[in-house]
Image (cartoon, rainbow, N blue to C red; front, side, top):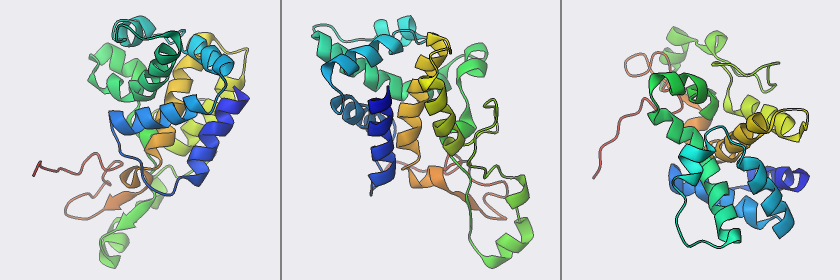
Length: 207
């Protein structure tokens, strides 16, 4: 676990460009972490991920056929990294348990103009803390989740289900924090008076 945390921390600190996002980018993060580990560590982490509370539905049922043991373990890593986005599509009861929108980003405010800053001054309503609360909640930000996840994963007194779930969040959020729209929030009186929610409120069209 310690080496895995180091591998992810190196990615977090040294990455100089934003990763491609959605499934592909998150799977790249997981694949790099996987390949930093010895085969024994790879197998140990994959074994923990098999305790994920949604393993049967989101991992076992979707795993490609014909993979050898090492390829299966790497696929499990990659699937864990995209799970927090998979949870967006859940029904309301499951979404309430697994989908946490604010965990994907932090709202460091940016303004279109000085007038917008003076009119909106949202800083007092934003969670800009870098220290995780005693228990993560629906206002926690991506930095708090990364820090809390590392503690939870390292705590062997925590249930395997919780550790596996937070490991999937750690894989995912290390990718998210390199997404520029997930590390700031754009405020505009006309377009985004409450911020763009990590870029999720920005509408785009396919060219």
